[in-house]
Length: 227
Image (cartoon, rainbow, N blue to C red; front, side, top):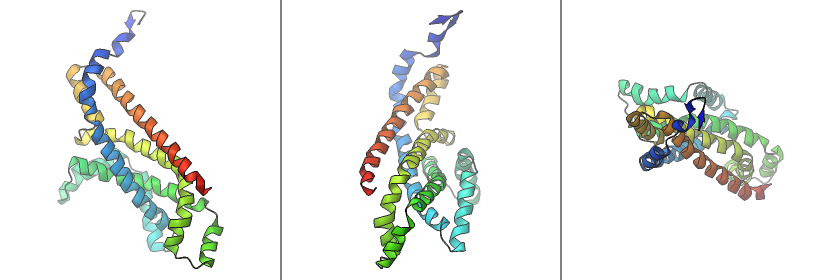
């Protein structure tokens, strides 16, 4: 397509995109591994942070509040640099992959904690009172009665966090993790065609996030029985 002498077709080289696709896709397993492992850490840690955040014990409540505030108030890229380039100064070293997984896990846990806290608070207080009347232990009540209902409420925002983690894994390229975006940068630098490669990687992230959306719908159907 040509408009006033400008060739829009030159913005995207289909041949280069097709030829580069296998190489770029080599980074997809790394992207998915960081995303899934990081989200897994975030889900577990986030739940305990949410419980601590809502605790009456000040020794649990305030440290969790400070942690959540710090993680939400600092850029993910800065935190990755602290883990990978900063900690070796004090003798703590991580591989680039480990630093990325830990970084995304710790960072996402802060957002997940707030989602979990609001979801748990959304469950009718009468559920807790009924469980206490039946002398059910706290953890049994939480696991079998409260969490299933809170999970249904939390699924949409948690899915958004997962999508954000998937897209943010591109930041791991700056600490040399060979994920999707790092592979894309290699080809872009070698072929001097950044536009084609960046459009290509965008078109790869998109269907990944679409699949996560389908997973959300499936989970919502599953947990709808707890309505």
